[in-house]
Length: 64
Image (tube, rainbow, N blue to C red; front, side, top):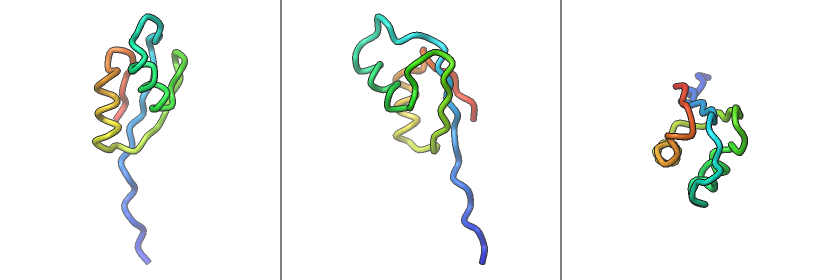
């Protein structure tokens, strides 16, 4: 039996504080699994996740 191809993932690291940011951006970070500086989260590379990353691109760094 052949294995299904592994889903592509993207690793996101938070490097800036969400203080003094709109509540939507703070909620987006929580949705990405981030809430403190230097936290990392590995997520499936989907259009929804890419949209969330784009919304807080100034607060996170992305590793493909």
